[in-house]
Amino acid sequence: MNEDRTGGLRVLVVTVVHDPEDARIRHRQLVSLLDAGCAVSYAAPFAAYDRTPPPGVRPLDLPRAVGRRRLAALRAATTLLRHEAPRHDVVMVHDPELLAAVAGSRATRSAAVVWDVHEDTAAALSMKAWLPGPARRALPAAVRAAERAAERHLHLTLAETGYADRFRRPHPVVPNSVLVPLDDVPPPGVDRVVYLGRVTRARGGLDLVALGRELAGEVEVEVVGPADGDVHEALRAAHEAGHVRWRGFVPNDEALAGLPGALAGLSLLHDEPNYAHSRPTKLMEYMAHGLPVVTTPNRAAVELVEAAGAGIVVPFEDPVAAATAVRSLRDDVARRHALSAEGRRYALERLDWRQDGRRLVALLRGWTSAPTHRP
Image (cartoon, rainbow, N blue to C red; front, top):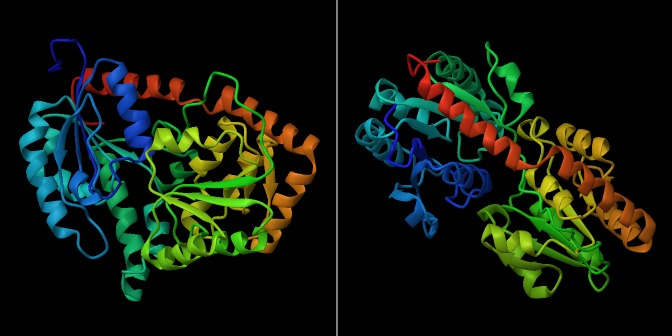
């Protein structure tokens, strides 16, 4: 093991798809690695997203892989891995696209390479509008084959237990938990509901716009996060009309600080296969900050909300039902406070990243201490 002078691992974290401010990568994993004394290099598309690298890391800028424009980013990542992997004990990649870059750079010869599996890649293809229809139908089988090959040569961590069925061997789950505030939080208010995260059609962006119209003059619908092109203009127009308050991209810490005191947190995901197995991180963040939640019935979301007793489930693509749920919470103070307390209790007991972050660091140390870097 080639540890630095502080005794910590040298870890290279790489993404060409995710926003460098991605909460799992930037605000949880990197923080845990730095707190453990690791020397962290962070390779990400800082310039493409107009993001400032976080303090404490060695930043390495990469192009962004977006839509059909992916080749330049993969070439750059392959070159970077070829030069940087020998300088690190661990290389952690966050995009399935980077599996080819890892193979092309032969990074596994010098470092323990870890793929942090964030999503059901094959299921997500149905949501890629930039892919031609025939490709969307043919690629899932290729993706599954690539996943099976990856587990033969790389270490895997899974963000969800529901991803385990995609692989032939068991792999450790490092869940998409959140940093739960340990201090008391204020009770939920009555005049504002919040959506936190990237806004797309599949994530209910147009439903948020319709919800804002339904609740105009009663309860403010606050939307915090950047919007994709399929909903950008509709969201901008709703903001200008006063139906929603769209704040755009807000740094994660600032966005989370704005949650306490809201009436409820919103998650209006559509019925997409990629969402069935993934607990929406925003739900956990709402619960951690004492907000009741209003969510659509994706299986993982329902399981979380029902286990915690933390909110209301409404039908897919039904802004009127969402508005009814919001009004019911506004008008029933006892129920609102009970859902808030139960969600907060559940988050403190079962959703706190502090424990999962320590486990992640222990996994990385174990893999680098093994006789071979291969799984």
